[in-house]
Image (cartoon, rainbow, N blue to C red; front, top):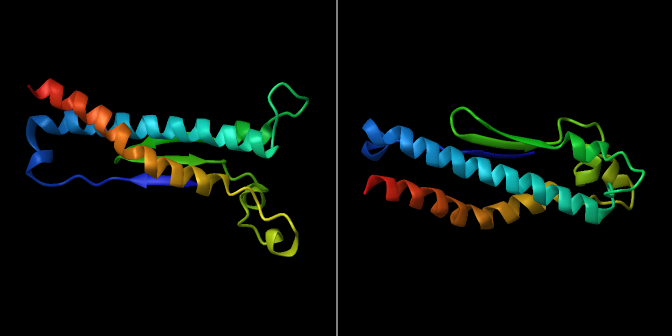
Length: 132
């Protein structure tokens, strides 16, 4: 699971500008969630968890979903699939087998941290343009 929570406070975030800042923040989170979902799909496909156009049902990939919730938080999860921790490498069975997991969510989390600034700049630059 990848989650992001943002808290806004102070005079800049009050008054008439508040809804615009919140919209830019939610747009930023939505884009990051969408990018994260797509990146997870790529990593899982490369890792062999599912293959596009094959007989594989892609069940695990179909369970991965992201959402932006109230209070400015974003979440990407596998919906609690029972073998999700094993695929990630955080399950107890990973300690007793050679398979150490794909670390897909951890890799995507690191990747998203690197993407966050550019995505935020894009959406907040649009906000600054509206304030002129």
